[in-house]
Length: 365
Image (cartoon, rainbow, N blue to C red; front, side):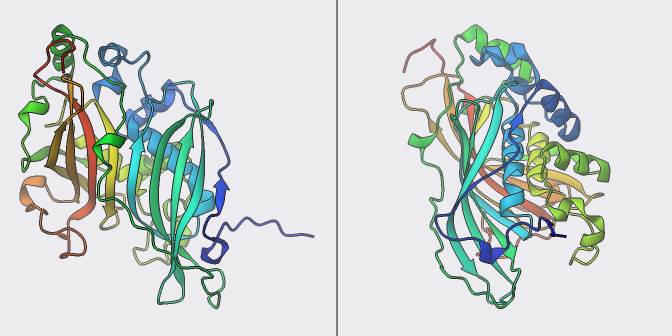
């Protein structure tokens, strides 16, 4: 009898230029949005209310940006990271088009880099992944690198290449069609968000300590990972994870991102959408029972060319486990590679958002 056990790709199965078409397309629904809110506590108005979405020019209530990312990421796991030790980082992630209930998503990835680790047991695989809708329109693209185990410890990397990435997604590559059509619409938006702090209210160097915390329950993070159809063993298989360094299942890093962004609503209520993720690091593992907190630093701000209604903020979202934001010092100097993270830090995310501006004159420049 022929064995058909699916063990996934190991490090030696990847080669530069390889293109992987990921299985299981997904038609997303309003139910996905509701479950995402239930699991993360997300409160962003454009994803919560049709009336708010229409104030920004959407025809429907779009799915939360990070819900789309997590679903797309989940598509790549069986081919890229089912045998991963750790997902190491992200770069050049761009949200290209809104995704609405009824859209069907599918993904592909191209291998753009490989590097064998010195221990001989694993290697780093770099991939650029793209998510498409039912019309083959690109809605999301990103780069990630992941440490993948070898099947054969004697196998050697046939190719070595470590790609370089831009430190931020440049302004000219940021795309978003959201708009505020009038002063009245802006007033209505602020009423729905519960805040009058707009793009103009933030300055480079500001730090926002988000006051709320959220304890992650075992059932919650497992339900979230199933929602994203991410079947990585580190999140699913409690028996296998008993032999790991942590000794138990890990919370999927994308879900940690979602919770921390949901916590960041308090103090950043008028964020209208994510334009890009410039880079990200999962600095430490998160497990069920941990309580997450977060703070945000404003790294930069830009006016959008030709627009008076919207501006962009480059933010640094720092996720913490079991320590309130006010108790953890700024990490401005402590980026990975310069010095060690504070022991409470689990997430360091550099991302760019779009937010309404106060200087709105109904369509001028």
